[in-house]
Image (cartoon, rainbow, N blue to C red):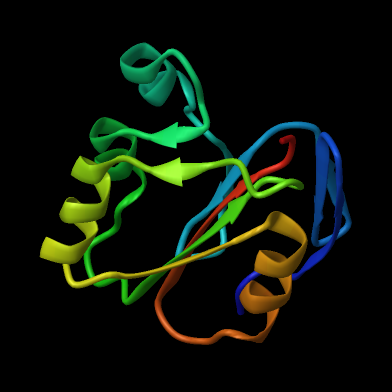
Length: 120
C-alpha cells in the first residue's frame, strides 16, 4: 500500500507520520526519497522547472501516472523535454498545487509516482 500524505505547509510535507522539510519523490513501491532538484537547477538555474535529466531519474518502468505537486503557490512546471519524455513513456502527468496534489495522491490507485514541491 502506498504511503498516505497527511498534510503539507510551506516548506514541509508529512508522509505516514514523518515530516519532511524538503521536496520528495514517492516511488511506486512507496519509498519516500529526497528530490534531486540539483538535476534541474543545473540546467535551468531553478528547481521550478523539471528537467529531462530529473524526469529520467524519477521515472520507473511500468509507471502509469506521475502526480506532481507544483508547490504551495503552483509555481513548478515541466520543461518541454520532460513533458515529451513522459508522453513517449505513456505516463499520465497530473499537475496541481501541492495541497490539491496530495488529495489526488491519496485517492489514486495504480502504478503511480509522486513528486511534491513544498515551497513556492
